Length: 139
Image (cartoon, rainbow, N blue to C red):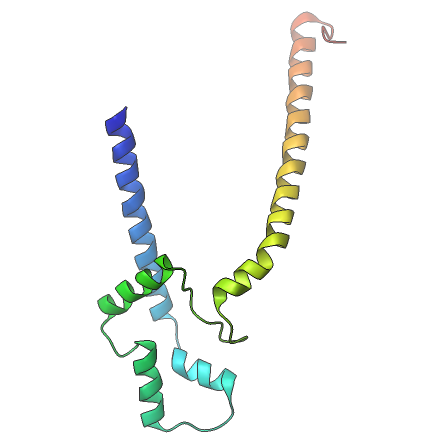
């Protein structure tokens, strides 16, 4: 049993690593330049190529993909999810601000499904008992 649990944990870690790699690569395969997106959302002024290169260096986009990946994973593990392009605030603060309503909606949906499905289960059991004995033995 212990070996099964260890094997499942190792597989879970491998799946987590593969998913982070797929997300990272998918973000890099998207068309467009993230620096130019930030510039277009932030201001209408023109930036020179040197200024764009400086912004690219500050964001770490001038490094190789493996270095960018490990920096990205390190930032995520430390709770740094980056800055919102639209709002210019840390993404983690935006998530925390919206978390209470998200939890409320999720919990409400869970409770509705729980009560609805438990009633369905009772009805199915009663129907099965009625069919088996010819009458409803629980009424």
